Length: 137
Image 1: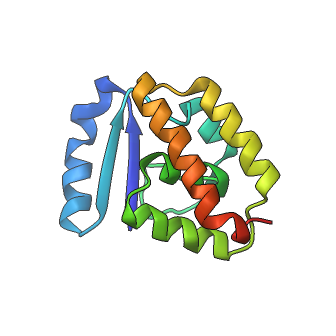
Image 2 (image 1 turned 90 degrees about the horizontal axis):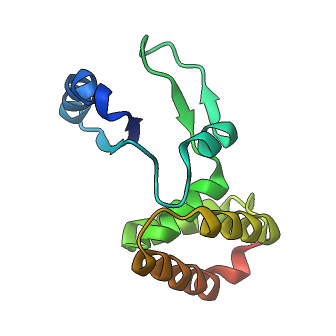
């Protein structure tokens, strides 16, 4: 399981033990301090995410990222694992080309990475369309 933990800088010490425990349990944990992915602002991500009502962790709220947002964050990195994940997401046949394009355009406007990173995101999106256009509805 891959867990992305988004916390404020003041909470970093508080969650350090949690991160270490999850890593011991063989979870992959990515910690994002003070923000979210370069493609998504935190407030927008949370509105679109699906709350998982899981009582396993008493003090942690678990959200599943919306498939469009998940796809775009993977396009932003676009490494070998991300490309495989994107293909798996697209095989669900739940991603609509027009909605993904609209979300991409929105994310491009609010992109928080450097100019070079933004250019790379644009190139990755073009490469994504070349690779996977037949899997989009």
